[in-house]
Every structure is written in structure tokens, then in C-alpha cells.
Length: 446
Image (tube, rainbow, N blue to C red):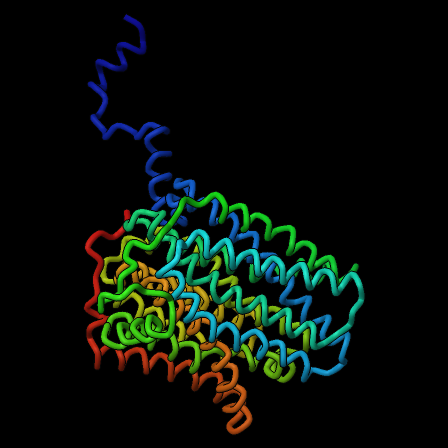
């Protein structure tokens, strides 16, 4: 008998322990844990959505280049910030007007054709901007006209594209699809201005040219979509819908009598109008954080937070009580914004604004998902039109509120008070009108 065998007999059989998990099984557990946290990309399995995502991602990135280039070019031409400010008006008015009409058209026309038409108009507007830059036209009025044309086309494109999503993605994957879209837009919001700055140093036309080039993918995506005719062409009164004023009014009446959707808009308006602090960033950067170098970080912080939240959003689709989650997200947005206004360190302010951006992404996903799943298909375009108007108008009204309040009471009160007010309003609305808090989904995601 060998010494090893003798040792085994003397010591007895080895203790029975729980067998070690094989490495493959450990990796499987880690992978499952990661997928529960990481952004859910399952909607990209569907070819139609995948093409539309690629097209919208590249075109949105390109549009950020143009947004920066237009302002820089306008100032170069006029040397007056007043004219630069007029760009905002030239973009906002058509967006508000055509968003409602574009949503109504999306409910009566083939959505693929409407998306293709509006995308072509946007592309032509970009080509116009490129041409005037190459030819050195140097006309401030022409710039405003081209911006207005593009904005009107965007107002039709946005509700149409969002109304398409429930037709090409399973209902259970709509939250994930919205998370992908919002995350992509925030990535473009961060990266676009940085790339624009590099291109503009060579020639302003480069920014417009890259935008025109990337937009060809949006046209390709629209061309490759399946036909998406309206499921119902007859209105509730029995007449054929034509996408006119009567259809717009009916959509607004439906919204007014649907507490869940109406309250989702109400809390968003409260969040943007009362707590959006971006108009205060230049003054705060100069007075508290040492000058212009801090401005870029302040303006990027919210979008960076949204990107991080999007990349770790695997849990979002599993939430069943989306109404409560929406209210909590808006409250979190307001509190984080208020805390950022009290920060005496730039990096702490950026961190807290990033937290606010994360909460904003969550609230946006749930609001969009409610619109796409709660409203019937024949009203989705009009509801998305209202959504577009609110998303475009809310932050601009927030800029006005912040600027006026700061002029009267100072930047700290305007910033911190606005965040606290938004959180309080969201809580009050949730308690006073419980329809939103009671809203649940029957089949949450994975």
C-alpha cells in the first residue's frame, strides 16, 4: 500500500462539499446578470426597426452638426446674437404648427410614404444649407428660411417615425425600442457638437456636407420599410378622415379625456418648464465655476447621464407600474437638478446633472411607451404630434422661465427653486389624480 493510500485510510473519506460551479456555468450566470442590467437590444432583431434605427441614428447625429453650424454661421454673417436667437424662433414655430398636423397625417396616410416624403424635404433643406455655404451667399434671411423648412419637415417626421414603431416591433419590446432611440439621440447630442467643432475649423460647409451624407441612410431606411397603410380610415362619426383640422381637434379631445396620457404630459411639462436649468449655465459657469471652460461640461452633463442610464437600462422594461415609475423619475429629476444648483464644485454639479439626465431618460421612455401602447393605432400619430410639440416647446419655455426668474431673484433661486417646484408638482399631480399612479402594463418585458 502506498503512502498516499495509507493517508487516505487514516484520514477517512474526504468531506462532502458543494461541488464547485464549473467555469462555463459561472460565465452563464455572469452573462445573465449583465443582460438584466445592460441595455436591451432585442428590438434590433427585427429588420424594419433595425434599418429605421440606423437611419435615424445617423441622421440625428448629422442634424447636431447642422444645429451648431447654423448658429456659428449666423453669428459670422451678422455679428449679432439677436440674429442667432432668431434661429430658435425660426425652428420652434414650424415645429409646433406642423407637429400636430403631421401627427394627423400619420393617422390617415401610409406612414412609410409620409416618412419618406418628410425625410426628402429635410434632406433638401440640408442640401440648401450646403449650397449656400459653398457659394458664400451670406444671407441671414436665407438661413432662417432653410431652418424653418427643415423644422417643419422634422415636425412631420418625428410623430410619423414614432407611430411606426408599434407596427414593426412587438408590444412587449416597445420600451426597449424607445430606450434604444433615446439613448442614441443622447449619444448624438454629446458627440455631434464635438465633431461639429472640429469640422467648422476647416470650413462650415463640411458640417452641412456630413449631415447631407448621413441623411442618405435615413432615406434608405424609409425606402426599405414595408407598406404601412392606416388600419382605420373612417372617423368616429363615420366620415373618412383626411388629416385636417377636425382630426386634430378630435385627437386633442381624446387626450383631454384620457387621464393617463394627459397626466403623463402634465408631469413632463412641469419637469421641463420648472426645472430645466440650461439657460443659467453661462452665468453660473462664469460666476461660480471659473469661466467659459465649465460651460461645455454643464451643457453635456444631462446628456451624458442619459447615455449612461440608457446603457444600463435592462431593468426598465420589467417595471409593471410604469405610472408610478414615471412620477418617481420626474421627482428624481427635480431633486437632482436642485442639488446640482447647490453644488460648489463643478464636478459635483456635473455628476448631479448626470443623475438628473438619467432620470429624464427613464421618464421619457415611459411617457413614449404609454403613448404607443395606450392609444389606439388610429390615434398614435396625433398623440405623437402632441408629444413632439411638448418635447420641443417645454425646454424652450423652461429657458424663458429660468432666465426671467434669475433676473428677478438670482440664479441660485431660479435653479434650485425650479427643481424643488418640479418635484413637488409631480408628487401633487400623482396624489391628486391617481389615474397615472395606478397605470400598469399587463405584459412587462423580460
